[in-house]
Amino acid sequence: MTKFQQRVFSGVQPTGALHLGNYLGAIKNFVELQKKYECVYCVVDQHAITVDQNPSELRSNILEVLASFIAAGVDYKKQIIFQQSSVPAHSQLSWIFNCVSRIGWLNRMTQFKDKAGKNRENVSVGLMVYPNLMAADILAYLATHVPVGDDQKQHLELSRDIAQKFNNDFGVDFFPLPEPLIYGNATRVMSLRDGTKKMSKSDPSEFSRILLTDEDEVIISKVRKAKSDSELIPSSTEDLNSKPECLNLINILSACLNKDSSETLRSYSGKEYSILKKDLGDSLVQIISPIRKEIHNLLNNKDELSNILSTGTEKASAIANPILADIYKIVGFK
Ligand code: TRP
Image 1 (cartoon, helix red, strand yellow):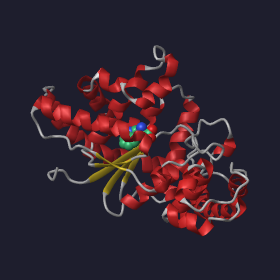
Image 2: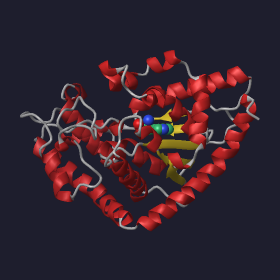
Image 3: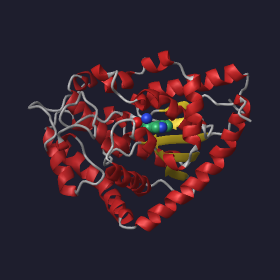
Image 4: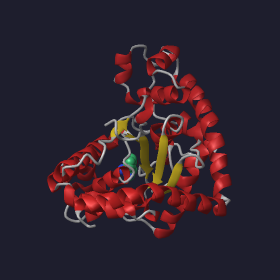
């Protein structure tokens, strides 16, 4: 693996306002990683259309995700942030991967099974080959490290399988086997209404999630109304684990404070939920408030956003196009 230059790649789908789970599970790590690595961050609009999207909402969501990256601290001057569909190498490589990847592999993907459900005959082909496109995203840059939430671990394993099979089939050592980077406590931020479900933009209850665009009072009131129980905060990790809502609040606060959850638990055990919720609300406001303001500033400056996007397209293409040209030679297209 040493022959590969270390490079980080990750993507976020533009399917609605970003929430705390996206921030703590992904974007916050994106910001950390740029201290150590060359990073390529992508707004994956082609993944978004694997399920129906409204075109004008998609258009504005793409800009909102881009603005959120920047507002959260991704350095678009040093690193690369761009829109997937603006670099055709992703689709071109994904076609090759459609021919490397196996139907049996895709059939095993739990996210596909969950999303398709009983509707398997009627979902888009794109939804099924989604992980092949994700492999193309990563491998078009020969990326070695991929920060993802743990729901994407299986997709990343599939990317490794594709890279490995390609290398074997063509007798080359061309693709690195990309490694997941999965962080800390809050990689799984759960719903504030149900501690066993992931925080999600598709949950019907707005009180289940905190958005990066929520006003301070809204954040505080969502935290205050978060589901809890009438007991005091437990003292052992074992008891905490049997209370998913409490565990979630402790985990989120730990992630905000960059602390271990056992340490956070120690400071709150035996206390009332209202105390924990007050501190959590304050911490979240401190983190989200400046991000929200910067998102609004950027969204009011569409020219700047579109300049940032074109620079991103150029920088991303400059890496991906020569790699794709080599792949075309290996495959026999050239
Ligand atoms: N599938 C990822 C998600 O929904 C998004 C994604 C697309 C991605 N391409 C990627 C993540 C490449 C990491 C690397 O979260």
